[in-house]
Length: 333
Image (tube, rainbow, N blue to C red; front, top):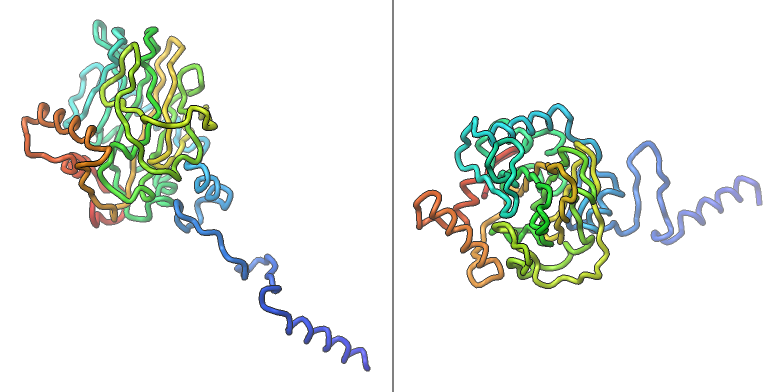
């Protein structure tokens, strides 16, 4: 047999192999593989997240992106926070929350410390955070292109007064939300300064987003607990936990079923972070009557009734009024 015939025989033998044995090699062109692809539930296909980042979020329920928000932007957010604390500006719908045990404010004498600004969607300076392109670029990986900003907060964890009230109990954010599906909701949480274990960084229980929404209520803490700081009733204290120590501008994105909380602020300074919960505009509202969310719905309704003198507004209405479109089209929410 000639050398050419031998070569032809080798080529034919390769072509006759079963398809399962054919594996494409990586080239500059698009790679082809006959292997069954990994099924992604929590992240969407785009070119923003690396394969490693997608897998990490799928498995753990959070990813941390370093140095995402500029120092210039954060300093603007801080300056606006100070103006609000000094009552130099009045923002419609803004809820100013104060720590039950902290009598000393940062900026205003004889005022209890502001521990949180909630619902700043009518403040253009703070709401600029929610529409930052570098934030929305990552948010779209979880929500898709039509994005609603649903819940806004600037958290100002005060130095603990010795009663441990600066803690935030372990909880799932979905407890507060009457819209679904959970997998198309994500939180962006940005450190406005160094955040570590000493001043009460976030602590997360990786993988708990694979579970279901648990029952929440006020924890029975000796020093008391701040308003609407509900905690998970039953989670394993032995579950592995991760303390998310972050630098100014670092941003963590996490799933609304991820169990998380924060410890005491054991320093003399205030620890600040800014956050927004986003949802796909294709999400829909649900009826929480008869569910574990009934208690928070009742509490929110009571606050709304007192604030606006309206007793006909529903739990779902309060979210529809706060939601703002930040990208794409408002198709449902």
